Image (cartoon, rainbow, N blue to C red; front, side):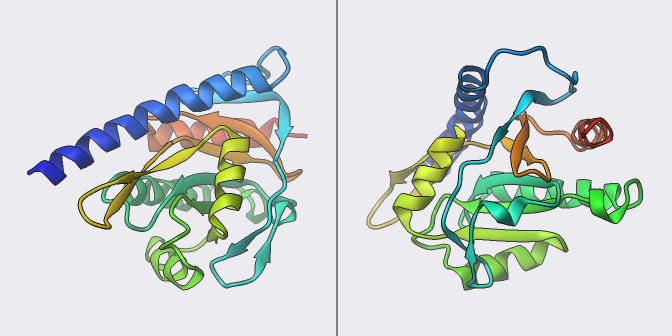
Length: 212
């Protein structure tokens, strides 16, 4: 019962921090400019903000950096494979959105989905690969050194923290914000929870149709 209550409170904290931290960071870090697009479920960044560079590892064990995100649209989420509810629910939602978009946009506009691990200690490349295989096509996972993951998340305004539990167990308090990266490797939009499939799909179509 205590663990269930703790997890419930943790999930609520994560949802709130995803809104407050992400919104505060992007509102202060991006130069003031009129919003180019009115979104149903998020904020379009005008101008888009360059994605911070990083040195991490993909789920297939190969080295990865910012150039991974050039040439395609990508929906980015920070989560972890031991997450009990929010992460699998969010990844399933993104998979569904991608599936719906497959019939609406050309192949070069179909978004990839990237999971950056907030628990790199447990989320090794093989663990990420096996986990993401359950969500369908279009997924990539990123993990790496603890400090490198934390620095990248903080630079994006979606920090996370380890929450000790009984014994050696722990949970991760993390943002549930979703970021949209454009083909120029720039952060084009920030979507705050609660996430809805129809609204996210409509916002994506609006952003992609108006992109340069």
